[in-house]
Image (tube, rainbow, N blue to C red; front, top):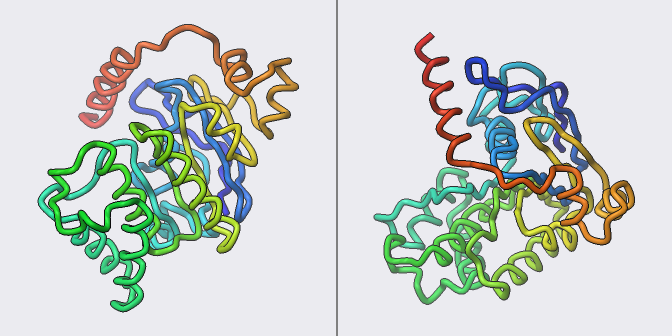
Length: 261
C-alpha cells in the first residue's frame, strides 16, 4: 500500500528527512514513532502530497504523490496533528462538505455522516458550529471526517492527542474493526507508547530524520532488551528532552532562506 525508497526532504542546508525507506502492506496497522522534531510529520506531508520530496520515491496505493497527486488524495483519509476544521461550519456541514469533495452519492454520504457522528458521540451536536466545540470534540469530528469516504489508507498524525481514555479506546476499537472488515491500512503517529504497543502490527522509529529501528513491538523490545515499547523507544532515541520550539524556529528560518533562493 505504501512504498518509500531513499526519501529525503531538505530545507536549505537543514535535512528534515534523511534517505529513509520502508513499506507498509495493504491492510496493515503501522506505527511511525519518534521524538518531537524527528521527521514524522514531514514524512506524512510528503506521503499525502502536501510536500514535494527533495529526493527519493513514494508510492501510495500504486500512485506517485508527485506525478499523480489527485489519484493519491482519493485513496487516503487524514487526521492532521493541527486542527483543520472550518470553525464557521457546523459539524454536519464539515462532514457534508468533505463528502461532496469525494463525490460520495448523497444517500450514502448522509448515512455515513449519521453513522460516524453517532460513533464519535456528536450526533446530538451536529447542528452546532465547530468553533463552539472543545478541543476533544473537534478531534473526534476530524476523525469522523477522515473516515467518511472509507479510504484505502488513513493517515493519523497523533489522532488521540487530547482525548480521554474512553474515547481513545473507542476510536481504536472502531479503526481495528474497519481494518478487519474492509482491509483499511492505518498509518499513525503517537506519543502514547502503550497505544502503539497494543494496536500496531509493525513499528518504525525515526530520529533526527533517520529510521533507527523497524519491526514488531516484540522484536524492538528484544533488540533493546526492554520490557516495554516505551523502554525500547527511549533506548533507541535517548532520554534527553527535545527542545521542539528551538528546532521549529531554526527549521522555519532555514525554510525561508531556501524559498528566497
